Length: 259
Length: 347
Image 1 (cartoon, each protein chain N blue to C red):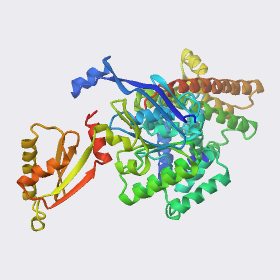
Image 2: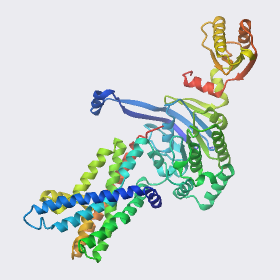
Image 3: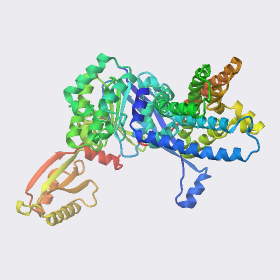
Image 4: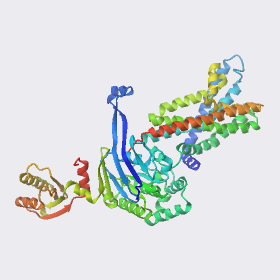
């Protein structure tokens, strides 16, 4: 299935190029926005982060969201509306697992084509923004957990389309929630205290904040590393169970369009 | 012998919002709790034996696809149950899916941008078909179909006929015990239809696959099915051999009369007049009878006669009294006409 996703994705090379360009435009906008914020502040450091820190964080965070973005909410919604979902339900494979591997091919393409280059560019442009040692390992492990967390959230949202058949509003809601609460739009450090405490116990920060903390932090104690990875792992398991159950219940109530 | 599929009092109801038209209606609908219950399948019971090719017929909207979705495990019945290969398909969806194949005439299960052969390989892996079995199937297909011309084409570049053919090949690939064909020949040309019917017959004979066929094409029914089940408005109307179908409506025969000479061939006005004349004669002799159906086909006037109500010979002589008969043809009623009568509410 990974091969299928990969092959399918490569059919649309132009789309890939546009995606990269789109991301760059976003980064340019962010640069100027945050420059303005920091320029208008009397101190160099806001909430413990300098302008440089903030930029590096946001560039990498948006790059993560970029490659980790999955189309399954749209895909499933469209299949439900057209009735094409019946084809997938007639196959002797677990729907969720099947979906994952079809997506995964695309995610890997994006990881290699957009994220890794961004990481490399940031490293050199921002003058060694992160150390090149163990933290890279933790980072990649964390990234794998991020992919899973994001997938389960997406799958849960996709299952909602079984009931509503409409995709757009739900997907926008999900994107906003994930975007804000994962720390990708605004670093979590900038959140007001109470808000940040809430965000920290939710799974969304596991998508961007966790891996980036592991990447950018210098000299982190092993207990810190384990705690961050541990929280991510907890969410992977919890979301897996919740999304799995929700799907099981929903698939029995579904009405398949078309005759 | 145990039936491979059994339907027991199968019922499916849908809760549907009563929608109103116009802008005000659409806004009102957002807050409406006004639902109605639509019964798509109503208390259908049926036994299907292994190796049968059974035609599952009914007018549009009769509930055929809904029944098939329940039999294949996609929908859950509201009441009653389906037992397929010893299990209830909607309770064991993936397990049941290992043993069935499905072809939907209006959609494809193949991967759109990949060549057909890639789809077959993926399905071989998904259904865990051994390489030997896979090769055997492909060889079998090659004896009936020119595989080379379609195997390497991306599905999205195929014509409808080629795509349907590939879908059917894909459905039988893992040698399932049951295959559901939901309007497989829809939109296909005559040659393609013949090819596909041949293919289905051959696979049913060779692999003893049970086939449930839904179709609107009576040619399919005549060529493939020995047994027919007719469903309308969710209820089962008929469940028997194809031969017994004509007995449903008593003895019907079609009388084909040519009432215009060779020199007048193609004179549609004259033919219309003859049509009116015939109707007048029948009306006169058998006043307010509803057991004749008169129509025009090519150059002949066709009269469908219920032989229990009027004798064929009497009809011929009544017409002969008034006009010259150039040619006569007598035919048994076609399956198509019977089905049409049933759809029209003749039962």
